[in-house]
Image 1: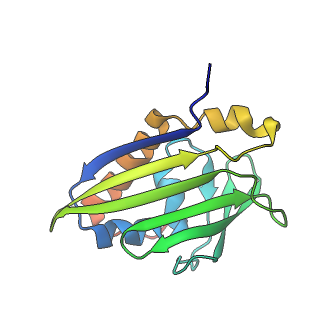
Image 2: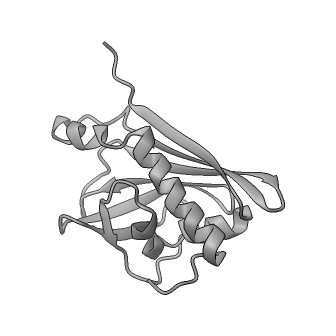
Amino acid sequence: MTENRIVSAEKNIRAAASDIFKILADPAQHSRIDGNGNVDHADQGQRITASGQVFTARLTNGDARENLVTEFDEGRVLAWKPAVPGSEPRGHFFRWELERVDDDTTLVRHTYDWTQLTDETRFERARSYTSAALATSIDGLAALAEDDGAGSEEG
């Protein structure tokens, strides 16, 4: 049996892509939308603006992760590879893609890809990122974007 190592979910959100992207590009908002309950917090002031940037987040288990931004297209695409601080990324990544449907609606696609993950000690955790968990993240993003426009609540 071949294991599916790329999972995704998508949903139309009633908000402009620019407003949704403001939330995604602010790591301090990630704990508010994390469908796996893995992200505890990220410090304010880490607004993602380019590929090659690194932002840091603290996990609910107390560990830290440095996240290397691998794709960045303002208002459209954001992807990163997590790593233990001081280490190279292990071969898995998260991607958010936004497609404008109309002025007030955006198709949001969230993908987790672990096809290049070789550290077998991480496989069980990687399997927890299911389409349902990714859909929960999108639902959290929708709640923020539709309720307060751009995640402007201090967090």
